[in-house]
Length: 565
Ligand code: NOJ
Image 1 (cartoon, rainbow, N blue to C red):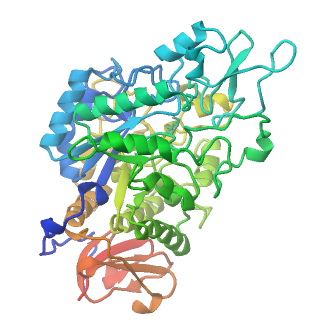
Image 2: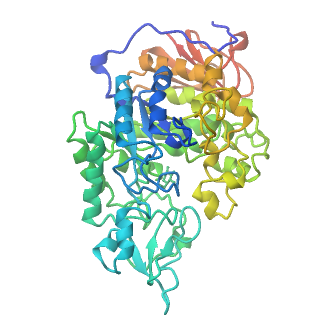
Image 3: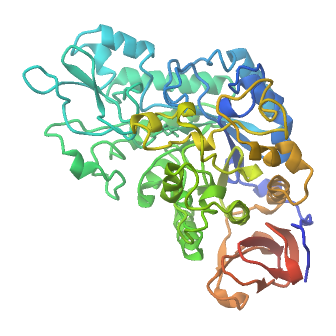
């Protein structure tokens, strides 16, 4: 029985049989890069493509299989780049197409794949199509690429209906000639009309543009929103404000005729060797994920349920079972603990006055108090986040890691209002803090004008506590979260060989319901203690633990991996 005060790792002996290895993306660990906050090469405070290229050795040492790059396209940054002016170019502040090509070359040389974000639900209001639409009359072909409708009343000064933007306020913006356009996000993000064939053809051209440049796949923004039912009479917002439904009955989201668009995209992906891959950002009912993850569609869809799971064995079991349901239909579960849209996982799990309440909303409420109440127990949050990621990495399927999670970074909860960039904050009139707290530029060194992010200050203020979480500081500590990720990813490469999965019931360790344990191929077992008391360890070889194992027992909020006979 191993006893240790340090996280422990031990290389197992057998390597996977490569003949039987699944396609890379079915077990990939994908690292999400938010380009403006990753690494800044030129000192303008905004992360850029050459900055990412300079950090490819870091990505290699971390051991990820792929990166997903959030938008780097020309944009006024009304929504962090999800307001795209031109889908086939690079924002000059982030570099050039040649810089993009250099990044692809460097990543591929390091055996790391690249996914780029495609944003098909809306363009920016500076996109050439929208500029043309505004200059064209009502009813024109240019306006038909978007969703324009006449205003109500004798002066047409009331919006066509009472629908609300997901960022707050009306979903309709007047253009001054009696018409309004629909924007389900910021006013600078007019929604496209996917019933228009020129829109469909142009996006297929965009997919080919990036696939031709060597990208391996795409993350599809708001994949559930493209097709809308704008037939009158409109349903009042009070009836449709609950957006996630199990039955395709919402006029705006998850419509029945949407998979047809993705079948057209699949034909484009399959023009390439190997076929390009895609993952849907689809905020849909779990029973509807398959519509996006189907093999004749995008192939994968994020399972967002873990972002809202409480740190409870029952919640974890429920969410894992839901993902395993995808697996039983031949799909690839796609796990994540957080992303650039959600409060950081270490913070969610460290809001100590709310034991068992770790949803995104808990952390958003905490943000409303400038990160003061309830009290944040940083160490607790990090310990649980470390235990959580070992669970995810031991599951069949693919796992997404948001930049900074590998450092155990917390949400920056006290950004001054004047620094906030997120339209969620602006459109709520300052009521919401928005999503900037997880997007603060990464700390690479314990000092310097932006903790090694770049030669000058960063575009969002970094707190002093970032110093301890820097890549350089954590690289020196064997018990850091970064060291844990490196060890876990290296082990997973060897261990994650197939889809086999089985729950080990609570009698297995004689430990009760607080322990969650499951078995994977080759005797790989993951055990997590969610309870308050240490429990015994199974017989077998300890491979890795998310924290110390004093007295040869598994303490609370800790996961350990074993190879059992
Ligand atoms: C989802 C993206 O992840 C988010 O950051 C963005 O604001 C919305 N889609 C709108 O594009």
